[in-house]
Length: 390
Image (cartoon, rainbow, N blue to C red; front, top):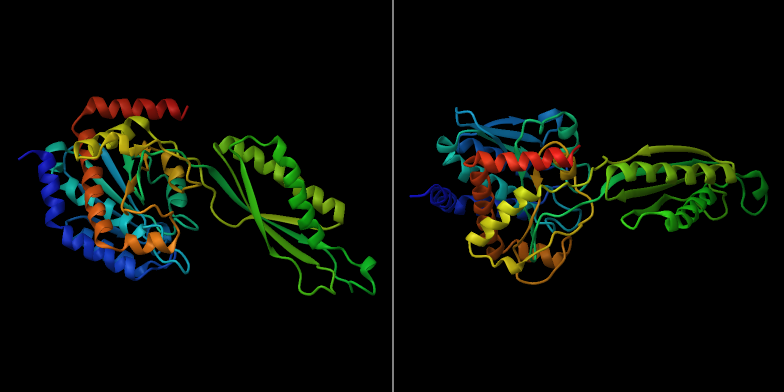
């Protein structure tokens, strides 16, 4: 029996277990940092298969790292697991599948690790949809010793690992002075006017933005009653672009818009980050090609694998700055429905999606096996990463 056959058989032998866990998580959606049931089921399964589990990583209650060491020197393979749900929509992004794709792959790869050497780390990363735990994990250097990091995302088609946008989430609070809007409006300082001026200034700035830039926001607080001059108003914005460098530059330009709005209206301004900052995803193309090759070996026509696209912002970008990383999309539903919709959610809970989850676990494990068993391939991956991060 070949090593890949061993991986396949191991995953197939546990397929019913993996499907049951995924179905349980899908039927019991939990928001970010509240994934206690999911974390319990996932860590128990990893321990059942001989992994050593550290819970509450970085004092994040639903974060974990599960490790298995072959006892032989070799590369470290990281698999990323996500399991948080969306408000009101449940698992409309398929995270109940993502976690078992990665954990199934780790368990499959473990079956041949005595041959290849090296070790496996499964990172349980809560709250991808909000304050993604990969960000503080990356800041703590938890991925710096990882040789390759892999995960796959459910979708309605196959798509190569592509790009994502670096992002900052910034809150602008304006403080003015209240007054009766009809009797003494001249006594007031209108904080809402400052927010509106901020939006207008950003709109004027768009002509000078690069084509990959995205700046979009909401007014989360705009006053209490129309007959009172608002003394407090808040706008929240996402500022994004293709690189961290330009995102940082753009953040300063938007800040100047906010400062100008405060100056024009007589308000005072307070700025803060209300979510974590995400770096851009830097796909390792060499590693990505290995995954695509595994799909081809497993019967997927290369013509059915689309070019990688930009899907917004991911906390995985912060991981890709520290180690070679891929984030391909895989077909789990037979109809074209976008992520974060009820239609995708409902189909992603059905048996064909669970079968696709098992298929993807095998593809991820086979990808890791190819890297572990080929020092030359690993070196090419590392060389590309070193060039990309200069």
